[in-house]
Image (cartoon, rainbow, N blue to C red; front, top):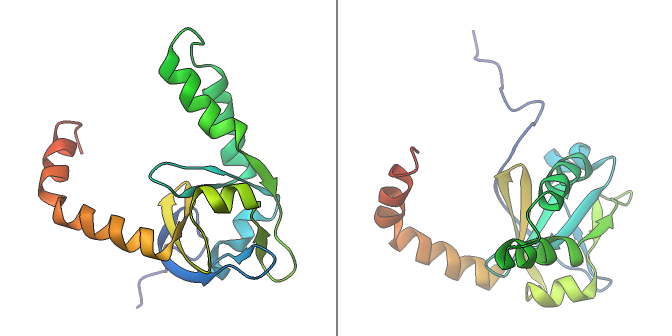
Length: 154
């Protein structure tokens, strides 16, 4: 008997997918994830020069946490501004594409080739060349990264 496909009802984002930005600034999402964005999504500035893309429900949870951060701490104000001020609600069209605003494409250096990466509760949108550079650097430092995560109980 075959083992059931545990990802048939996708509840988390994983993997890497190559896509392109069309002339109107639209990016198609991987087909297997589109149903998770049926109610809308929020795209915002991410870390490391990429964009974060959250399903609307996941974004609402994150935004609530960001709003609860103490205003008296400069780092929390800066992080909340990074995430919230640049955020834009977006919707899939009939072909499963999202319109990414120009200011966010510029922030993440998105030109033509884009890598969509799955990171559990969000997708990240990377310029293909930036992703390759970042991925290679991370792979080269994987031992040190693993040691640091060990200290966090991972």
